Structure formats: C-alpha cells, structure tokens
Image 1 (tube, rainbow over the protein chains, first blue to last red):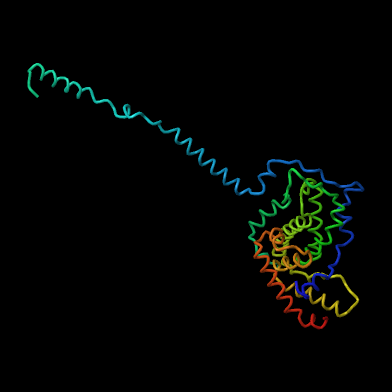
Image 2 (image 1 turned 30 degrees about the horizontal axis):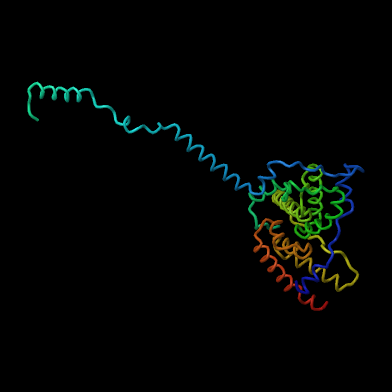
Length: 108
Length: 199
C-alpha cells in the first residue's frame, strides 16, 4: 500500500442515519435478540461442495440404471445349453443310416 | 445505470436465493450467535459505507441495510457458526444490493425516471482543502465501474485480502487483484493534482 492508498484508507465515511437502527429493531422491543444456535444438519456437511455431491448422485443413478438394464437381459447360458438341440429329423436320418449300414453290412 | 457486468442475471438470481445460507460452518465447534443489536452497532457503519460507495444512493444503502437485518431477525439461525462475521455480512449486503439494483433498474425502465445525483460519501470536515479532496474522491469513485469500486472499497476501507474479497464478491482472486489495480490507477490519475497539493 503506497502513501496515496494509505491516505484514502483513512478517510471516514458518513454514518448510517440513526433512525435506521430504530426502524429495524422497533418491532423487537427491548428484548435481547440472540439467534438460537443452529442445529447441525446433513446439509451443513454437504453444502461446501454441492456440485460434487450432485455429480456423485448423477453417477450413482447412471450406475443404478445400467445395473437394472443388465438384470432385464437374460443371464449367461452355459455353452452346453446355448446351442439348440439338433432337430429330430437329423437324428432319425443319422440312426437310419447307421442301421442301414449294419443291416447291409456295408464297410464304411 | 449501475453496471454489474461481472455476473450474469441468472447467476445473480441463484446467488440471491442462497444469500442467507451460512458460508462457513463449523459443526463441531460452532461460534455462538451474537445479539443482533450488538451486531448492528459493530457492522452497520461499515456495511452502510460499502453499500453507499457501491450503489451511490443513500436510499438504496439504507434499504439494503434494513433488508439485511430484517432478514437476519426473521431467520435467527443464519449467523450461528459464521467465523468471519464482517466478511459474511458484506457478502450478503453485496448480493442484496445487486438484487435491489435489478429491481430498481426494472422500475426505472418502466417509469422512465432518470438516476438521481450520487450521494455524498465521506464525513464532512472543516479544512477546505481536505473537504475538496473528499468531494473529488467521491466523484472519482463514481467514475469507476461498480465492480471495481466494490473491490477498491473492500481493499482500502475494509483491509480485506484479495482472497477474502474474491470470496465475498464471488470472483477469482486474480480478478479482484486486477480490478483493484485498475481502480487505484484511475483514482490516482484523477486525483493526482489535488493530492500533490495536499502533500
């Protein structure tokens, strides 16, 4: 702070009108107005970084939505059950061919 | 018209909505809430001076001080746990002043009434040279944009750090520092002849 700034900083401002104080506290009468101590709430803890908490909540909802959508799709099926059984026609034709080979005693 | 270009209207509205929330709470070590009359006696002159310098209208400064203390009376828990009472009150006063400015600007636009003459700022003094300097300083301050004036006031007359000013006005500390430098340079340029005479 230089001399100029120091000089300015020492200049006194005009005072608020005396009637202002009376106007503000007129309804309070003569009683002492001490605010009640505020009880601690969760909001006090969350308040310093509301955006961070909001972002966390949004992330949580996204993960919850993803999790719910995963549950709605079918669970993983074992490989043995994954492929459908061959149609009956194929089995019959396979068996018929084998039986015919046996009956006819055909080599290969 | 008062230019508050530092903040958007929407941001200001949001800031005003939360204007009475405590900014610093120590849940495990809460400071006891003070008597509001005592609080008024300690801080109202400084708040009035800041508001007078910022708004340049005595009626506005008076209205904002009154509105601020009436809000505190209505919501008694607001001040519990506040560590830096002066800074907290200045911050609330600043927000309310911007809100009052918005209301007044809308009213003036609707009624077409022009702004009135800026209010005197400094206490009167017998010495004519010193009195002239005070009048010149009041005019020079009126030349500054309101956002620079707010920073200059908090730095010079409240001796706040740039970090504290930044928190009170919700601007970056670098912005507060540059606004102060621009403001002081302009005041020095406007007042140099008178100041040199007085030295």
